[in-house]
Amino acid sequence: MPAYELAQLNIGRVKGSLDSPGMADFVASLDRINALADASPGFLWRLKGEGDDATSLRPIGEQVLVNMSVWKDVDSLRKYVYRSAHAEVLRRRDEWFDRMSDAAIVLWWVRAGHRPSVDEALSRLELLRSQGPTSEAFTFRAIYPVPGAVENVGIDLGDECPAT
Image 1 (cartoon, one colour):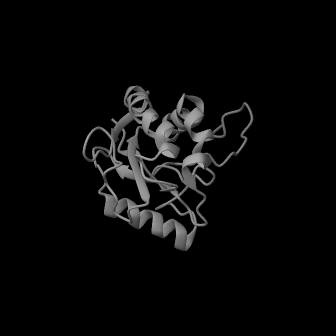
Image 2 (cartoon, one colour):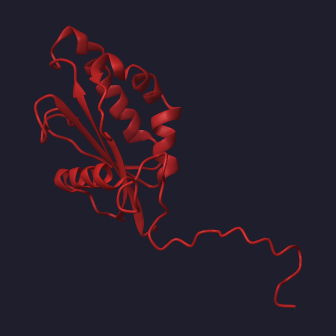
């Protein structure tokens, strides 16, 4: 069993209330996209409020939605986000969410089995915003390895055993 899992938080400032006509397609997609996440390889957990999603949770303001989940690894999350039906919804995000000037997505490693709180996740987002990507808070564009992982330094020793 791996010692670490990947946590992610993303936030978005909605352009209207969830019961407005402009948000109807987004709201209609929630159950399908959440079910897709739940069934995706590498998915472990997602934040839920009232109902089967997190739209009722508004820890940083009424206009900001939070989404948080835990995955086996970066590749599992990346495949779900960019290579599944989720990508279709992602392409339409400008219809439903305002562009944010600060980082809106943060990734970080958690001990296997740990399920982060919203406060923990928001502190990781603030860390990313204040310090940029670090091993404690990073992005898909600047991924940090699992804590304690040995990185391949790329030394080519050829075909011969270096001990001979």
